[in-house]
Structure formats: structure tokens, C-alpha cells
Image (tube, rainbow, N blue to C red):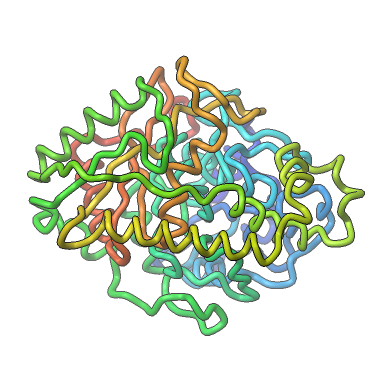
Length: 443
């Protein structure tokens, strides 16, 4: 109960705008009967507002659905509750999870606890702000194109996008573009491992969910020797992105240290990837258009600018030709990813950035330039999206800062190798510990 009271007090005093809904009465009742022997016994957590909790708002962070209430609870949240977690409330997200800034008509802008006025990223921005800002210890997150790794990188947190299907998206899972992964943002490697031990495992209502694995947390550190001598590629332009020189200086230093620590073999291979192009954006917008249904186009003026522009630009352009182009490009990207991560001729890990630069303005717009280098709003997605499309794991690890704002190192690996990524992060955490919360945060 003391932990919950501390969280609720911190949330009430916070200017981060990290929560869109609180349920203190229910949370206190759950905390009163919490079993502290469970993995998360009595721990208050935040739930991303794109996840469902029966009886709570189910808005998709969209003003159109401001009055809609969830009629079911997602499997991940159910498993967290069974593991003893206390649900404090809903954390803010970008509208429909569609952009890398958490600023909506419904909730306003969410701020980065490292610097008020900067974004925590998106779409899991409220979760990242809440955890890095000391409001709660853990929060749910989702990653359909980088929405765990991007905010983790912007706020100095651990952000693991696991192999596709590791945590079920049931009930009522809609498979869509086959890129969305459930997970968390956390302050520590151990917290992330425990989260997956509680939440992962097959659910029959999600046909692509993966079978249970042996627990990860008890085996943390067991793979440090296994990591020695691995082959790695260093890609400052992963996915065709442009990374700011100041950020890459920080990451290069951390990468050189890891290569030395583990005796990795740096391999110079072609890491270029085919672009998915506009066809993929068209496909994604189809799902949002279907969700809005009869509300569109009357609702256009109460959507965020990015969603409105995306819908106006893509409606009517999806058909057999676009679908064929999507699958052709998906196949081409999968072939290239498989070649890069091939166990005999490729590398074990790709080391790159989680973001092209440090956090930009909380109100947006998405940046088109940084540090004098032309970047473009798609840079974040270019760095993170390849692992979503291919379905392999990737992790963002705190790696330092630029001008007092966090920098995230992204490590990309083969399918089903999450424990190797966790042990790389564990080594960084032990050798160069990062702040558990942003400077000046409540705790």
C-alpha cells in the first residue's frame, strides 16, 4: 500500500502528463489484498492506453472514442494481475499508436522527465515518462514499428522488442501487418526478464503466439561467456536512417567498448535493406480507417495532424496492386535480414542507434533536420522497423547522453535470442550503470 500511495502522490504532483486515467479506489483495494510473494506482488504499474482493462476507457488515444469503455482485459494485463501487479491507471500514447511523439487532441502533450518540453517519444510515451520519471516502476508498452525501443531510447530505459508472438495479443487479436509486439519499458534488465517470465507463453486465441520458454530471470548472466567472440556489424545508417554525428560519437564509444569487452569480431558486410515504401503506410492506415468507420471524415478536425494527413493521403489507394507490392517488399526485406543475420556467412548482432537524435519537442512536429544533417520524420522508423517486419528481437540499452538527454544503443539479433540481448544489456548495466530515474524525478 505504501508503494501505491507513493506512486499516486508522485503522479498527482507530476507535470509530465504521463497518465490519462487513474483508478485509485480499485488500485487501493487490489493493493490491500496483494500477495507479496508473487513476482510483482503489490507493485503499482501503468497500463498503456492502447491496452484494454475491463471497465476502463478504451480510447485508442483518440478523441473520437473518448467515451468508449473496454469490455475485456488483454491477456498480458491479466497475467500481470495474476503475478500480483496493481494497476494504477492508463498511460498516455500516440493516437492509434501511429507516430513517435505522444501528443494528442484527447490528452495533450506528454513530457520527457529528463527535460520538460521534450517528448518521451511514442507510441509508448506515457509509459516511458512514467517509469523514467519515477511515477511507477514498470508499465506496459507495445512495439509495432519501434514504439518500445524509441521511447526507451529517449528516456534512458531498457526496451526489449521480443521475437514476434512472444506475448500473446489475445483476446480479440487482429493480426494486421504482423508487426505488433507486446512488452514493457523498465529501469533494469532484471525487471524486463521478470516481465516476460510472467507474461509470455501461448494463448490459443492468438494463433501466432509462441509456446512457453524456460524462465529468463533465473538465467540472467548465464550467457556472458557464450557472447564472447561473436560476429557483429556496426550500422550507423541502419534501414537507411541518418543518425546525428553527436549521437553516433557516443554510440561508437560504447560499441567499441563492447567489442573489446566481449572480443567480438567486427565484420564489414552490406547491411543495406530494401525500403517498404508508401505501400506499407497505406496498409497501416486501412486499419485506422476501419476503426473510425462511420466517424470518418466528419471526425477529421479532431484527429492529430499526422493521423488526419495519413488518412487523407491513403484512403482509396489500397487494392490488389498495393497488396502485392507490400508482400513483394516484405519478402525482399526478409531475405536481406536473413542474409545479414545468417549463422554462417552473416553476423550475430547488428549494433546501431535506437533513435536518430535525442528527444525533440513534446508538441512536435516530427523533426526534419537535426545538427545540420537532413534527417526526416521517418528516421526513427527506419532504425527500428526492420525488426518488426522480420519479427526478430531487438533491444534498446541506455548508452549515455548528448547535452543531458539520453542516448539508446539498439542491438538487433536472430529470432529467439532474447537472452543473449538481455545479457549484453546486463553487462552494460553492471559495467557502466545508468540512472534508474531521470535526474530530479521523485525517486
